[in-house]
Image 1: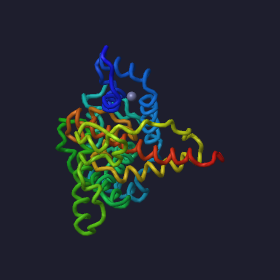
Image 2 (image 1 turned 135 degrees about the horizontal axis):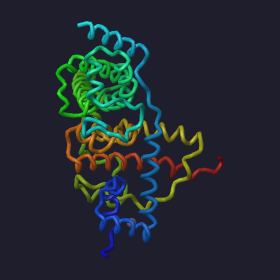
Image 3 (image 1 turned 90 degrees about the vertical axis):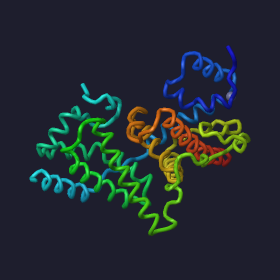
Image 4 (image 1 turned 60 degrees about the horizontal axis):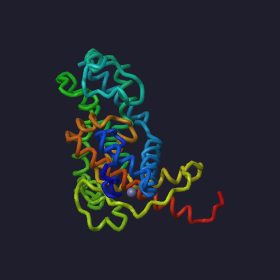
Length: 79
Length: 231
Ligand SMILES: [Zn+2]
């Protein structure tokens, strides 16, 4: 099994998280985690980043916009 | 049970009926169905619009305008894509137009958002950063140092503020991709369909966006850990 270097590891992180690596590349990827503390940390940090982005508060339309749109819908459906 | 192959069954949020049912309901004037769509999709549409326009107000206008466009077009919707994909394409088109017009009248508004996706990542970071210009790579950071836990409440709020600001400096398409994937939880297939890009291209955009945000968090959290451990 050829080893993976850090550069290749970083390039493949997103594909790894999307489970799009073929079995062999995946084994080399996870094998690298075992021997490289820096890349292990990097992967964890990417996961934390993804999770934090997912926790950002989202807002919806204002009540006023929503009312406008529901009114527009009534006008439109009476066409 | 979805009628559209592109539809994403993993997405969070209220469960809507299959596209053909939704479309038929709208055509028949079912206001509750329209209200349900507004609730389910507007938050993501606002975030996506914000990638192209200057502020929240402009994004709100764009999304309203897009929903009116949806009503005007729904009779002609032919289900060649998933309904949600079609709706997002409408919002992106309108947001781009609005963004261009705003940039013309307010010169400094959003040079960053007018830039396209393959700009160097905001965080080139690391010794290898300068030597690598390939589109599909993100600079390897200097040996990453573990972060302090960002779970504390005060820290969490600040983390959100830093992420919001970093999102604001991403090129538009990177921001759209990370918004749809990591905030809205849409599948890569759906994001490809919405932006009409290849899977490889989508992955590059997501990769760069995440790497930039990781860099932002790294600078912030590493600085935090250098301070006195008072909390
Ligand atoms: Zn490594």
